[in-house]
Length: 323
Ligand code: ADP
Image (cartoon, rainbow, N blue to C red):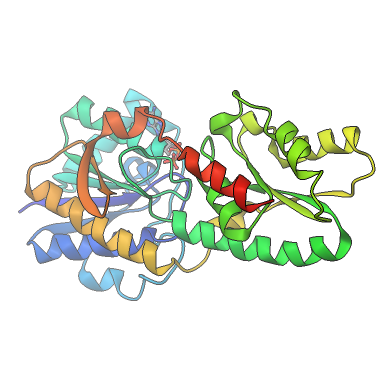
């Protein structure tokens, strides 16, 4: 009997539990055994592996975080660490793995899969939306909604005091949260890594934005080093325009929390089931994704290596609507 091991790895994202539930239930529905692996790759090495039944995943679809816990695991980056992981996988009779995580987790999966010729299917779980080959990732929509709620609140105080707020959001090297968060919250600008080397985004904003009749401004900044971060940008404005009252808010880990949105729950449910279907079809070393509302399989090599492009027209939309 086939036995599927499930783990969540790297940065946690709302909707990971919905994905764990979907993978578990779809696997059992199709006659597989299921084992839950605690703490990502760490649990493979420390042998924290437990049998999963349908009731292990009851009442979790609405919960943020991940019941399997997640971790970063340095040992898994070494061949010695991966050997221990492999021995434990065999010991537990696991014949395929489903890895729910981001770019780093799928990189680890790819290396492990080729080293041991072991079948792995990846499920894109990250708030950053930075995996190529899927329109969105699990957790992104919820994080975006959290950002919008937060910016709405900051807007109230920004307007009352006539201030410029730089609000830093997550995203690693990707500007999806910053750009779409800015559009959805009616912010004046977004500063994103994708175009950081092409244009002086702050310079442009100062040119266009500061001349406007508005008396308060909100700028969303992606956390990447390429953007300078919210603190760096605020310093620059303070030096060049000491007349402005500049403030910084770093949204931080609240962006990872909360009950997943309906979209993220549906995405996680579809992708979790698709991961099991992929194994039934003898797919291996692919990430499941959704493109134009259709389920697709993307080889790990493509999902990880390619930079997912930001839609340029969104920058124009933001610019046009923030006059
Ligand atoms: P995310 O999956 O959110 O991008 P990380 O980049 O922290 O998170 O990666 C999660 C884990 O995946 C790492 O702690 C490590 O165990 C594993 N991993 C990442 N990159 C590699 C690699 N090059 N080789 C082996 N394992 C890796």
